[in-house]
Image 1 (cartoon, one colour):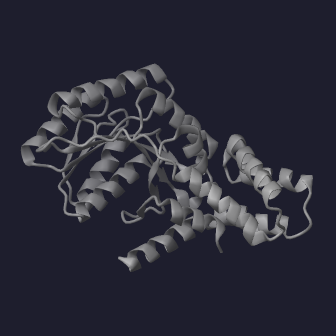
Image 2 (cartoon, one colour; image 1 turned 45 degrees about the horizontal axis):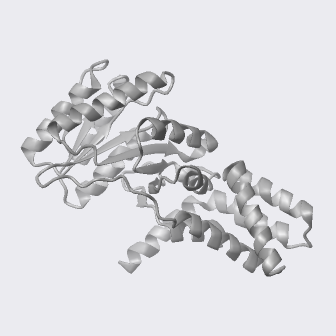
Image 3 (tube, rainbow, N blue to C red; image 1 turned 45 degrees about the vertical axis):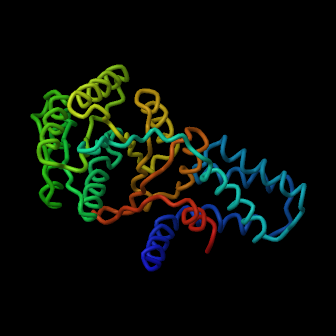
Length: 309
């Protein structure tokens, strides 16, 4: 088990290498010389570029100022520790969980939402692979009927992973796919159903109506569904991801976030911005294209990977 955690930390450290260069290394250079008011302005810019966002960057700088008033220090290690402690305090704040447990005999229904292009389908495949490896019976529901490519992509993953899939016709009713999938899951004793949904934001009203209908239909088969609603965000899009999260959270309360493509981003600070603005926990991170490139989010490992060499 210890080896697993060491391996996981190395993976997240590697994934956050670009962000660490943006944050810790530039901070060391900035505070390695006599600092003044301009130093704090430059620090806020560094944090902003790491995608903490203006609000979070300002809060971090204000916190550092306050700590330095109480305990003045020029030691870079102490300054970085102040940042680590503050980041950890944000990520470990108790969040109100909206996850539900399925009733005895019911499958766990996980609704996965997100705009097209975020890596949603691949993230679903990673979750399916993870649960399948744990010995759970998994079924995929290809309810993103708006795009034929999304159905085919998920079907290809299902074949590669050796898990069943329920799919409809392109342009068909997503709710019908969900109904068929949950009916099949209940009959086959499936443990987990992962539902892929359409990711259109151009028409927010239509999106809201579609998600609400999916929920209503799913509850006809599994009354307590969905038990989780995961939003897939692309870490490389930065603050645009926050905007997406706010829209989806408004339409369908989110239980957690799957942050994809973290390995390709210098904007890993987005995690802190998500927590501060939404209070929705990041539960999973994607660190590559393979089925195994998934890690559960761990606050301590994340903070260490950001600030420690």
